[in-house]
Image 1 (cartoon, helix red, strand yellow):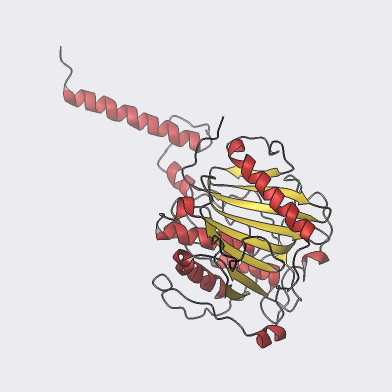
Image 2 (cartoon, rainbow, N blue to C red; image 1 turned 180 degrees about the horizontal axis):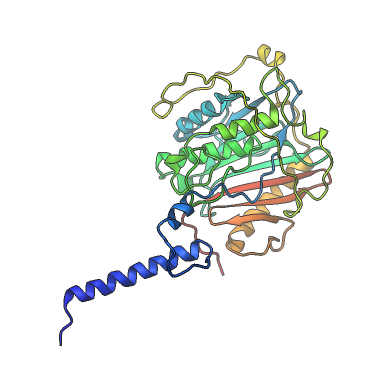
Length: 376
């Protein structure tokens, strides 16, 4: 006896509907339900979940306390990245509240072998931005900060890297999102959300499966920066500098790290008029040396101590050597090294390591969607 095609179709559809219900129930936390439970709102509840954060710690560049942050950026990117860089710097510089004053200088391309190129390594008081084919490392972008100060929350140097192994042929949205995201970490910002399955927040510090929705820094990012640095001619909402805060020797223990709990101000500053930034590339105007002398900013002509630079380079080589071996493992100690994994999930990770007696290095990685299997 032949079973009618309609019956087969009904059976298949019923099976798929049941499987979908099980999947939704699983991702909803396996709640206890009555037979009469209405499942229609479960997916909507998942989509509307609030931001999810495992770490909300901020780090600060040292300022004079007059409000705002003036920071020097050294652009070591090749010609293929100038558009994305210019747009991201402009967007961060034109914030509301307007906290940042970014002074961009073009340096020699970091990937060049010529003697005139500037190495993509740490320099005191400056954020360097580089690109290169760093290989099948698993990460799209990375930000490295050297942290010092009495309580280990003062940023002394920052380095943002774009990995052309993945990004050279990536679409513009993914390149812009990665650039904006890594610059944000360089200012000391944490993520605004680490849940990939909820609604996008519309800012580039929010992890997302859809970069086109989170191309720009958002108001939440600028309010957080205002808490950290204030705005020009106003004191920051938080301490003047990290050294005004109590020493927390165990801050790099993921179970015992300080959190920022100040609330943003109620008054809003009128927004600045902006052109269509998606279709153009904006060059950040560089200030003259005389102007630089009149304004406080984070840059300094001092170089990092040689022993610190050497230990930093050794530490990063150590991390790069072990990172693929450790991909996907739950243990917090990076095997055979002094690195400690603070957190890891499918789209990123944070690592920390002591440098000498007075410094730490913190590395934040934005993972590629498709990562290679770790070697045996």
